[in-house]
Amino acid sequence: MQRVTTIAEVRGAVRQARDRGGPIALVPTMGSLHEGHLSLVDRARTGSATVVLSIYVNPLQFGPGEDFERYPRDLERDARLAEERSVDLLFAPTDSEIYPDFPTRPAVTVAPLALADRLCGRSRPGHFEGVLTVVAKLFHIVQPDVAVFGQKDFQQSVLIRRMVRDLSLPVEIVVAPIVREPDGVAMSSRNAYLDAAARRSGRALSRALAAAIRGFCAGERRARVLRETAEEVLRSTRGVEIEYVEVVNPHTLDPVEQASREDVCAVAARVGSARLIDNAILGAPDPALAGLVERGDAA
Ligand code: AMP
Image (tube, rainbow, N blue to C red; front, side, top):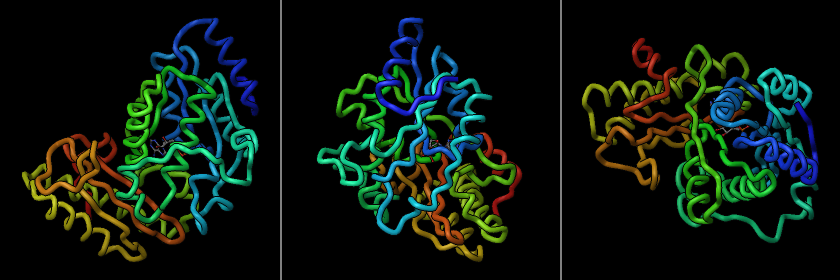
């Protein structure tokens, strides 16, 4: 695995990979890698000759008072995991490499007009502008044929698809299923913020989704009822403060009244000192969540 930190080095390495032939895939991350990130690397590997992994904790997507400073960082561990998973090129830039005027904000950014004021956007103003700006930059730096993202950050994946369409970016977007811990909790770098009690409470998010899906499978189509079913699980768990529970259309993110198979139930909650998110496609939950639904393990 080749490790680089500058844009010039990435471009050189990608040029060589192009000369060797085969598609190039990019997996953008903020590091502190876990099996969820590594599943994206595996997905990138299928069909691509070269896998580029970027690790960059993007200051532009953190609001004032959010966890930018304490966000977990361990580049040497990440590099070991990436190498074990056969990443070809690891790009871990500095702030001033990505933002030439750092710490001053860039003068030009990619700002979503629609879709960013829903779900997570309501409590994180400017967050998706930061995400789209860094992802657009990574696309221009690496120029991948394919980029792989996780369903875990559902709203982010919807906005990235829209950016690619609206700005005619020449990259195929793949969205891979959520990887979960054995007890159903979605893997997240932010789970590191949870103490033992909060970690137990964190199970409420996936259980809330499982409860909504069980309702959907039993024929309930009123989104309000499915939402209330999920909310009930969250509300009855100590230490969980609900931010939102919604059932939305996967393209417009509009709340629906009558739920259908492709709609997404999305939740966000404060648990201990972490803000956790999770989601599921009602008619096609990720395999780990489907297991939780089957076990009847929702309460
Ligand atoms: P992050 O490092 O949190 O910015 O995440 C980088 C990428 O990994 C994003 O596309 C996330 O959606 C994805 N990701 C994070 N957690 C998971 C998970 N548990 N399962 C699948 N993908 C994930």
